[in-house]
Length: 101
Image 1 (tube, helix red, strand yellow):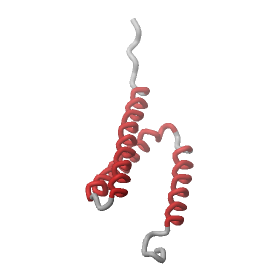
Image 2: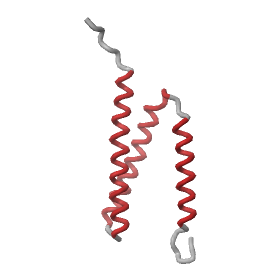
Image 3: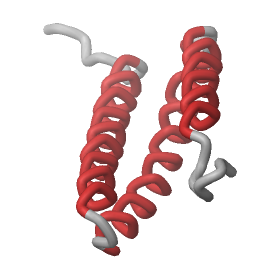
Image 4: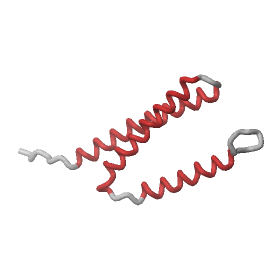
């Protein structure tokens, strides 16, 4: 905690940057065979994030929390929809094609 009782913004920013870097490295080194299960896990995490975002935005404690909650809802929904679209496209690659006549 900071002297004013609020969280230390620099510590939170450092955690965010480190989490982003580690997450990027992990995703970058994933085998193509594991892509679909990883996308499913990402969609599950985004679903949890969207529930929390709806709660935060719905509380309407401050204008800032409402705006950030709404931005988080939009980001989570974009992640979920794009994850399903990418997973669907990858699964279509493994389906057998009908022979041409």
